[in-house]
Length: 272
Image 1 (cartoon, rainbow, N blue to C red):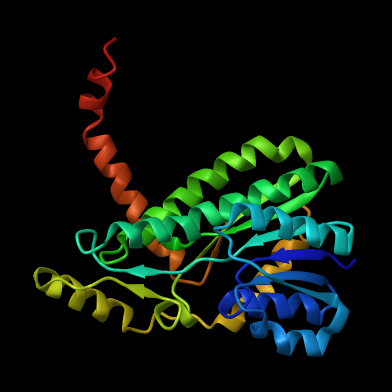
Image 2 (image 1 turned 90 degrees about the vertical axis):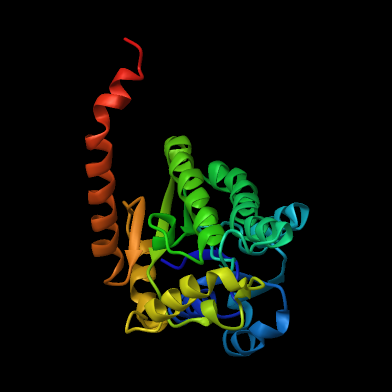
């Protein structure tokens, strides 16, 4: 059965790939972008099956209007994909207040506004699936990605809590956590801080890390996303890529070891 998908950040990368994959198989897609021209090719190819919406997800009022527009257009919204966001590259000390706030406005508050706008629609329907695009960097960290890490850690906490709050309404929540992919994430869509000489070594090590053979093929993710939206019992979390799980397992093994090593101190701090 055809679904209605509301997806943000559909101008390029995962958002555009996934939007076209839905359209190609016969779904209806309400796709938000900052510049409507980015969807001209899909509009020409898929016609009335696509509803292009110009939207800055950091504008809460505009987000609510966009969701209602999609609801009026399709009559229902089956899947909401919070894909809009970008990467901020720079060490913690290098990051300006504006850079940090802008990162959270897009990656966290934009996602929150879309979620809040969609929930009344999904509750009234008695069904729906909210897919939140996080990252493996919402579970583990890398130097030079600290504020981005923090934004995705926030998405993880928000979305896991949301899942427990809305399951009684027939609404599913899935947190999608890709490892590195060859999108525009490190290119045109990225923001970079003004570098400080003191962190040259840190940045060089980071560049070597991301310069290796770690990049997945974005096109390969479409099958996973289609399967995710079609399953009747979707998972709370889904990695994309083969590198995320081994990395997360190692990091959490180390965390557990540290917690256990200091557990006598932790237990004594309980007070009784």
